[in-house]
Image 1 (tube, each protein chain N blue to C red):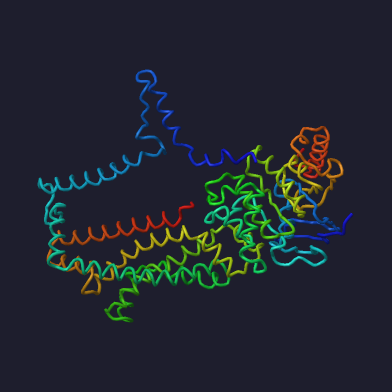
Image 2 (cartoon, each protein chain N blue to C red):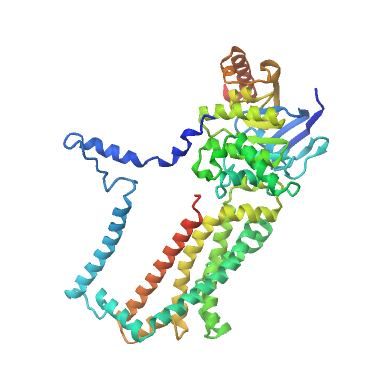
Length: 259
Length: 293
């Protein structure tokens, strides 16, 4: 086991009188883990993730990244949203390069090289000069992933990034994202309410209750399914067993109004 | 990746469907012909057809007007035929320096409009970006916005006399306060996601405004400028009627004094033509600037 990388220390969040997030004890995420926040829609898991990014501030407690409390947003923690994830006035290649726009520590030539490398990595090289409006929704999400990687973020915060895509594109992107994460050694926090997506992607799934979001359970998926995720795995009995288990946990966590 | 091949086909939806639906009705009698209805509910028209309908309807209206005036259904002293109006316009261009008057009016509109835009764009952006500025300025701007420009003409004359300043001031007054709120709205509608993405890439507030928020609002900003420019012409005529010795408004008002209805109408029509032309130019600019949309 590696040292704790991202630590939640008694984090709470209120919007006015409404408690949205309530993680009273310590919760730790290890480096280079793929962690999925699973919970009922609108439960506050997104708010918790936004607090990692510095886009929202906790009302109580703190979040630490490698020992230091997280501050305002910066390049170390990149965001990928479900919609408006790429800039329509920039071409695909310009969108990816935009990730490095505010980095003065790397030269222009290296920026170009990195841009092309990440375009290639997500399979968008041939669409370099297209505008986002002309490519599919799945490709637009890949632009966002490539931009975040090009920026050099250590932690990728992904808010239901595949939520608007059809099942087939989703599967393809999930395989690809998992591969990139292992290859580039990134820590990913991924928010979803789709149980199968959670099982397929995660090293660890954190199940949240309905609002205010509390951690109801943590399931170590890597231990049960291993690190290698292929489409065949989706049809294995182990996958289904874990999926059903998580469905039950989620139902329990969602509480009485799901009776 | 599975989604690459079909991806570019997304844009061509819809157009074939109308044809198929209409074709189904015609199957019994004439199977070969599939003609889309011209009254398809929310369906597009072929470009050529649309253009000819637009021109035809305008020409038809002109012909009707001509006929009504020619055959004595109206008193032409009050309602002259379009041919008389056209003749008056030609005569005015030749003998009354109408082109110069039009140029003077256009210059007034554009200078007031540019001053208003240069002031309103940064102000509107700041109002939406920093709530402090928004809270401080919105009540005042909203109040002035509802004052009718003609009500401020006497005050403008007291302050600036009857020179160019009065006209520019009145035009500015009519556009600045409207535009500033429109710009603020455009900025407010920039998706929060764009701002947050840029924040996580390490941009400063200024960089976010310059590189992302402004770019994101630009298409609707250009649209709003186009609309506001139209309003400018409304106030121009008020300003020129009240206090001017040049400009289209002055020409119209002078012609009225001698009951030269064709000349009055020619002035009005000329404003319409200039408005239509500048609107079309700005639309073309919009299309060129925002090809990515």
